[in-house]
Image (cartoon, rainbow, N blue to C red; front, side, top):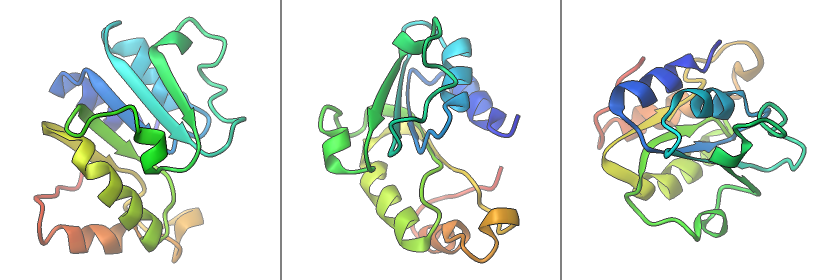
Length: 148
């Protein structure tokens, strides 16, 4: 499963509070809920109200705070800066979208937290439409980034 690195990072880092921005069907959120401690909190943000079917109506649905809407100050209004141990960004892939979402979400990352971007490579569906590598190459000038 392609989102297992997010689970491995969450488990190895001892993440207690996770934000998944761009949840789509919800398989990553379900995987996290199945393996993290019951007291862990998983917040998901996705624009489509139909998404999240992987965990909806399961015993893990109560562990997931599902928010429908764009990644914006309003979808994060109940959160405090510096409180997420892991932020997994897999939302819009255009340069401006990645830049917007990253700059909005970074302040919510805890001091020892990990920020994980998905779809770094230009391939398949995202070939020539993916601004993740371009933006992260710029961001790497100010933050220590590694490729996993």
